[in-house]
Structure formats: structure tokens, C-alpha cells
Length: 393
Image (cartoon, rainbow, N blue to C red; front, side, top):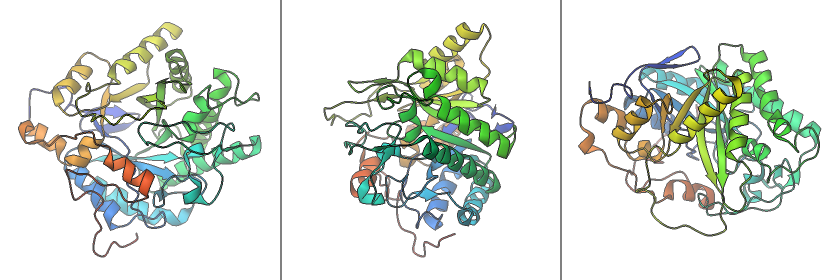
């Protein structure tokens, strides 16, 4: 075992789930399910990353309300019990390779495309999704949800979480970043409602608190809940400030959320075509520290909620430093695990010089969102490949 990274390779826990190391595979859509069902390709993709040594896999964005909540044609879906057997096969495969697994549940909201769903998108307010540099897309003006519809979607999240537990996952993650519905409720720009779901931070977080309360009713207090959220946004269409992020983090802690996967959002009307692989690593670790400091200031106590920071993680040195300096408790790794499934194993075996690094070209997300194709990686031809039989499970 590599002794240069004692923190990164040390055990940790989220709720009562024990993890063998501090490396979390962040959820990344693959768009390779079969009508929402797990197939051989999905299982092999995650089994390979589990084999590669990652401690926790957060399985990709999974729709709680199809087709309305979809932004690609072939995401995983969990809005009915018929999907549970395939999900059970997936969790069995991941566990057999030594990793723990959570499932990310989501609704695209105004990020859903009519060409995929055949319907006008819905959102907290009738505010169009602005241009996103990650997607290189904007979208049409959505229809504002009624309060009754919001209640129905909250219940869909909670029932999906119960299916997550029944499928053998170790926990669940609520997706609230970027162009997804959870984030849209939190943003003062995307959410301009004047009822109990908008107009103040207290009201904008209500959607999440209702979902979390209901998940606890259905799944119990020992089933870990993670929220992946944008703790701040920048750009002309930004609607979440750092102060908002601190307030939301504190309220989520009060609600019993076990961990936060922390991101920062960017909205811009100008395309950014630069390669991003050279940007600062562990970009959101410092933001995790700010959230924890803010909670401490608000409560007078050390925060109990765990934080998962990361962003552009390619080298273990920066990740180790973020953990050692107590900026966050876990490190999320995304695209690097598409390029190099055995990223963690190479670190453990002191073979870091063999790691291939993501170049930040963005093809992995663009082919899904713009062309409705399965995820691809220019450096790893195995990503998104079709398996000969590709059995639905």
C-alpha cells in the first residue's frame, strides 16, 4: 500500500456505511440503458471501476419521473418496481468487486428536452434554462409547476429512494446541481415563485426538506442520504450565493443529511472552448471548508455533516492535501475514472506515472446531450461500448 497518501487511502464512513478509502466516484450519466433498464454494459462499466479500487461508487443520474424528467434518451430510470431486479444485479456486481454504492436520483426539470420527452419542460418557474458552458446548450421556456405537481414529484423522489434501498444500494444521493430540478428550486434566478416554494431561502429549500423527510419515513434513519448541490454560482444568470450555500448546507444538516457533494455552478452566454485539463485540482475542497466554517459560525458547534470535495482531480497529492488540511472528508473523482478505471489501484500500487489523465475535451457529456448517444471518451474506447448480447437485466 502506498504510504504517501495515508488520508486518501484510509477508511471513512458516511452514515453507518464504512468505506475502504476516501475516493468517491461521482455520478456521471452514460446514456446506455435500455428503456431505463440496467443491461450488461451498465453492469460492466461500474464493475470495472469497483475493481479499480474506488471506495464508493455513486451510480449515474437516474430518473424518478419518466419521460418528463429525462434529458437524454437512455438514462437509468427508477420510477417503478419493474426496474428493481436489474438494479439488484448492478449492486451485486459492484459489491462483489469490493466497493460500496449509492444511486443518484434526479429530475431534469427545465433541463429536459422536448425532442426527448415530447413535452414542454417543467420547472419551479417559467424561466428558460440559460446557456451552460458544460452542455453548450440552452433550452426553451418551461411550464411552471403547480404546488400539487411539486408534491407529486417530491413523492416520486421518495418512492425512488425506497426502491434504491430495496435494490441493495448502500445509500441514495439527491441530485441538485447544474441544469437539474433540485438546483432550480435553490436558485433565486431560476425560482421566482411567491408561494411556499419561493421568495426566500427558507422557501427555496423546502422542496429538498420535504423529500428528505419523506425518505426518512420510508427508508429509516440508518439509510445514508447525500445531497449533491451547487453551493454557489457565477455568471450573469447565477442565482446561488455563498451565503445561500451556507444556509442550505446548515438546513440540510439539520434535516439529517449525512453528506454533501459540493460543486460550484457557472452560467455564461459565451462559449468556452478551451481545454480544461490544466485547471486547478480539487477545486471545491476550499468551498467545502467555507461551508463548514459557515455552519460553525451559525451554530457555535463543529458541523456533523460530511463533505465530498473535488473537481479536476488527476493527481493524489492535491487530494491528500485537501483531506489532511480538513477541507473535506472525501474526494470525488469523475472523468478521470472514465479515462482510467483503475485510477485508485494505480495509486495504491505506487504506479501513478502510469495514469492516463483526462484532457477536458468534454466529449463525454456533449455526445449525450447534443447527439443523444452513449457516453464516449477519446482516451478510453471501452467507455460506452456496446456489449455483444447487451442483455436487459
